[in-house]
Length: 557
Ligand code: ADP
Image (cartoon, rainbow, N blue to C red; front, side):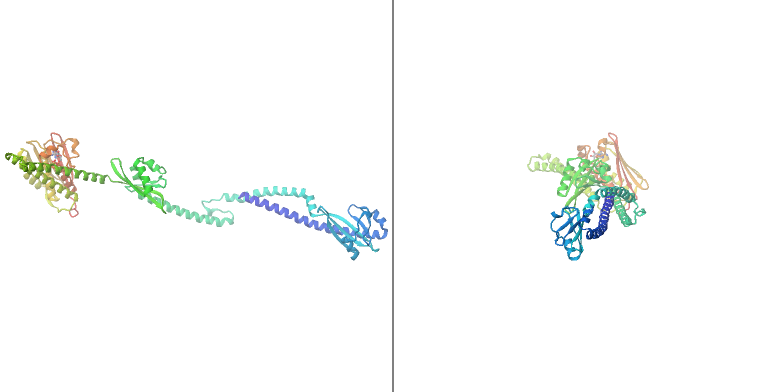
């Protein structure tokens, strides 16, 4: 801008200078031309008077470098010339000024010289004897004047250019200075040229608009951060090149990174062949998913391409915890395999014994043993199927009717039922403590007490003891079943509540166990929102503690 102002001022100054020089030169030329013509006319009158009196002798004495006199006869013959030999000169009758003087008494004309830089002026007058006296003088043309004045003109132009340059430079700086010092943060607070006011007002309006838009963008970014920040699922947004645009805290935890990874390639953040393949598959096909294991958890990671106008502009990566789901799936698979195995073993035994009998390979005296085995295995199958049905009912979590139950009465009932088993091995069963009344599903409570007491007998030593103690804690009822049996080694204690888990398979089978007893206990306790725990020492005995909360909303269960 400074340059433009500078150039404009210098150009205007030079143009004005040239134009004024031309106009002044023109005016001067015209004025001095008029004066010169008048002088020439006066000289002609003077010379005409002299020639009238003195003739050729007068003309001979005229000495002037400024003009030339030519005396011409009426027929055009040159009689005398002050600057040339008259006899050598051609006839002048046709010359414009001579012809004019002969006709009208006085005439003038002018002609350019061959160089065009000089103009010859002629004026002729007819004398009383009919001859014509002509005066001629040369006069410089405008071109000659300009060439003659070129040096001073150039000097003035250069001086004017320098002066106007200095002036223009200062002027430009003075004009631009306030513009450079404008406070664009607060456009309306500037007090400069009124001409820039509309611009500053517009700037102010745009600033307000930009501030509004920025505030709204910031608000949206905050909302986005708040929402994604409180998500338990990990969310990562990638750009079209696969670089991280945003990552929420849950994703940082899952992918074991930090928010500083924004801007890096996601594949570098989560280096694995599966991830690389999933990202490129999602970019190509729109969607892909993988499972990853981190910190004992299993996560499903979904990659979804984000498109605008049919073009991939990025990708959303959503990672969520599927540990429980995976665990349940694994459990279900294991359970199915276990059930098949558990059913197959007694069935094979039944089929085998039946085939032997059918083929007459069993002696008559062995018959009761074989039939007894068939019956025993069939009974095992029934027990197993009953336990599976119970478990699946508990899995379904169907609503069952609750009523007031006394844990003490229930324990006495169970003890009475199991007394023959205990007596067979000289095991003492006893119940003590509070009545332990609370609202529960009687069948399930019976199941819990029965299974725990049954285990305490089954895994006891001959002549051992089993004690069922009920404690009413006001808000809860506690049942502890202690035995003096074989105990459970520490490495198995966490797993005995799993389905089909048995410390000693043969012992369990021998004593009619299905491996589902404690699993049923755990689910039945959970159904009542209670908790079950186990303490055991190998060779000393086991104590299982079950706590039932009393304040459970009966109608809601
Ligand atoms: P099972 O039908 O085999 O008894 P459970 O689910 O009731 O199945 O018990 C799982 C395993 O836990 C048993 O096989 C046994 O090894 C162990 N167990 C359960 N209760 C006791 C106990 N009171 N004393 C010692 N071991 C026990």
